[in-house]
Amino acid sequence: MAKKLKSKRHKSAVKRARQSLKIAERNTFYKSAVKTAVKKVVAAANIGKKEEALDSLSKAKSLIDKVVSKGIIHR
Image (cartoon, rainbow, N blue to C red; front, side):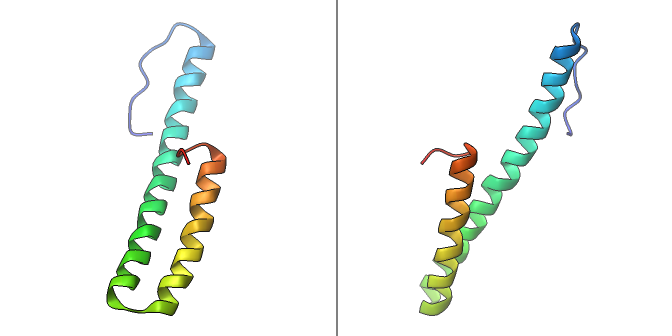
């Protein structure tokens, strides 16, 4: 919640602004986690570690499906 909330007139507008900051922070966390998981898969595949790549791929797929179900990224 690094952004400062501008003064709003209505109580509901203040709450929505506060919620929007929380949601944006959460979305950033999940998007970053997906990027990191994909990078792990690619790195393991480039090195030639097949078992590690397959394990990382499974975890990445699971994470991507979770993020898609939350509506953070589009399938």
